[in-house]
Each structure stands twice: as structure tokens, then as C-alpha cells.
Length: 121
View 1 (cartoon, rainbow, N blue to C red):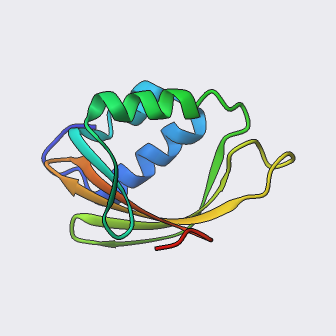
View 2 (cartoon, helix red, strand yellow):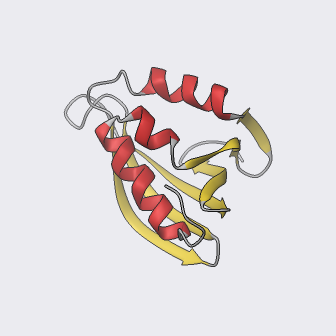
């Protein structure tokens, strides 16, 4: 994803499509080289493209991995998705609900904050 006017909504959608396709290159292309991932409100999970790619390369090995968008709100450079995620496939696992807050900067997602159901905040 390139271009100075790529919206937060377009980035959130592109990464969701790539996630569900388990297309690591397309997925990583949505994120900045210095991307930061947090568990809300301020627990840093990872920083940088190398750590990001390694995390999702492992996650994408799960053949049943699926994320379903339940709703999306967008304001300025921020997209907030309410998602339902199956880590082992719809038939084999119970879904987890999560909120993902995507912050876009210079046409890439630079930060993601996750709020997960049942996770202490």
C-alpha cells in the first residue's frame, strides 16, 4: 500500500484481507517499518518490521486462521475494528473477540493497539 492519501479505512481493510488469505507479503506491506504492536493500554508486544513479520509468519501457519469484521469506525488517521478471530478454524476453536485500533501515518499502519475479550487490561 503506497500513496500519500491511503486512508486508515483502506489500510485496515487491506490488512484484514491479507490476514484472512494468510498472504504474509501483502499483510506486511500495510505496516510501517517501525510498526509497534501494543496490548491496550500500553504493553509493548513488538516493535519493528522484522519482529512483526516473524510473529505473523508463525501465526499464518494455522490453516484455519480467520478474522471476521463485526464493525469498523474511522476518524482521521485511526480505524477501530471489532473483530471475531478463530485461531484454529471455525469448526475447531472458539472465537476470540477483539478490538484493534489501527493508527496510520504516511500511508502505512504505524501502531496497533489490541483489546481482547477476557484479557486483563
